[in-house]
Image 1 (cartoon, rainbow, N blue to C red):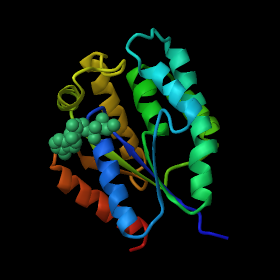
Image 2 (image 1 turned 90 degrees about the vertical axis):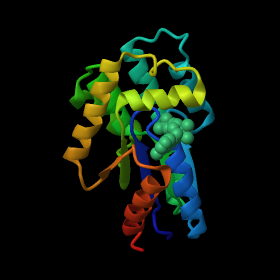
Image 3 (image 1 turned 120 degrees about the vertical axis):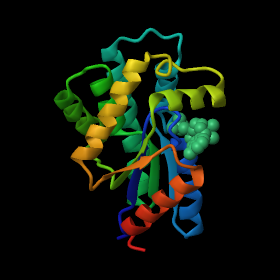
Length: 209
Ligand SMILES: Nc1ncnc2c1ncn2[C@@H]1O[C@H](COP(=O)(O)OP(=O)(O)O)[C@@H](O)[C@H]1O
Ligand SMILES: [Mg+2]
């Protein structure tokens, strides 16, 4: 039987550099000879991508509960259809956002009970836990500025008040303190290359290189 793959997630507020760093990490891993899958939440397969559009459209008025159920629906689909099959083939899966994002945004950000979120996260992900998570930490002011510069428009989450984004950041930092073995906090305010080097170094250690 093949070795099971490795599941790496990238977390952090909007504009913290997740997509940028995912691409660099994947390029590095591919060059090192690994088979890699790049994916993101919410989304990842056809049904989950439809849910992503529902969730992010600024035109949709979504209740907090609907929002949560849509995330979990999307995650279940994503894990079973995309992530688990890739891990079973021995691939390294690099995913932007996962269970920690639900805790940070809907738990710390919107005030939904954290214990309940943890339970439902477990159900939706079938108990899958990332082997390694990079938390790109950046102030919300800086992150949102970068998003606006890059895209020119904000999605439904980016339109939230600054106080919401501050709670999300605090939440992510709490999670990193609770699970320092898995969640590696990296300052998102360094240069792209410097952040990449740190991610590379920690990933190499995990891969036993
Ligand atoms: N370390 C960095 N320093 C300066 N700009 C960055 C850095 N990392 C990313 N960016 C830029 O900030 C914007 C948001 O980055 P992105 O990777 O899309 O963040 P996310 O996926 O977390 O929302 C992009 O325009 C990107 O080029
Ligand atoms: Mg992104």
